[in-house]
Length: 86
Image (cartoon, rainbow, N blue to C red):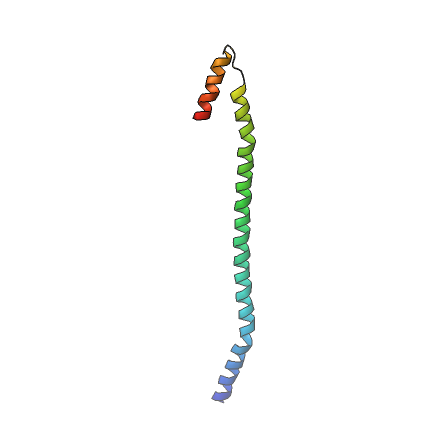
């Protein structure tokens, strides 16, 4: 009777192994995909910031060439040269 009970317990545990094994694989895959998604989101944020910076650059360069009221062209050239070296 005790041996049969032990056998039943063993068989039940053996039968549960595929289920728990699949559960562990699903959890591991979920964690992997979650990390991948997070990495892609960070890449997207960085790309958005890079585009924002790249879109600002032409405006900054154009502002260097805008003539200021009352300024001579020599003064503007000195400003541009100073901005480039800074």
